[in-house]
Image (tube, rainbow, N blue to C red):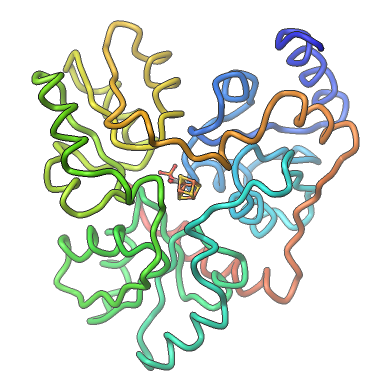
Length: 305
Ligand code: 13P
Ligand code: SF4
């Protein structure tokens, strides 16, 4: 078996030769984050994907993220190293279900979280991410909106606007299972720590949080504040960049059980294989892509926090 150092060297060499860029989400395993050209949250990575002049995008994340890159960069080859790295939340809503939900709320604009399939995005008016969901809903200026697929993100938005929010009943199992008891336990263990939580957590957990942020929002907050200790209520992969970027500070997981198995499927060997073979390719069918692109493009016009 090759060492991580050797695999990293081979991947970097091949990426240069093929003019490929390697993107990694903040939840990827440390070796993958360290190897990537760019790391970030879903929105940052979609924006970077749209700006790159690389011929190949290797997306180390889950399927909807690679699809989002294919939506904004139709001329580039988008590769996902592990084909079945999916998102349980995205799988909780199909385009057919959304069409039915829209019939129940005729004329109401649909705001869809990027954690969704291209088909669902194509049925939506505008996308949002955890970093800009409140701004996007306010930006619609609609008295009522449909929010899909995350009920927790929708509840968080509802608390920050006067607009009526009709939420789809989807959720991220990793965040939704975080209990108030687990968080209170972490707070008792680390009484001086600030609690940062992702808006995919249940409402009762968000009520305890000092700040609610996307993954990149948490990185920014930790870098810009002077606290010494932070409790992190999101997938444990984020602890790696937090610790790396703030070596003098301490970060504790709200629960060590917050592990997204799909985000951990990608390893260095899979990245090397994918680059060598230039597959599995993620390509969104043009008819769907055009419609989904409109929803993503609208989102990109909305300022983020
Ligand atoms: P971010 O956009 O905050 O990185 O979150 C993506 C995600 O999948 C959260 O579970
Ligand atoms: Fe999907 Fe949750 Fe995994 Fe994020 S952590 S990719 S929302 S299953």
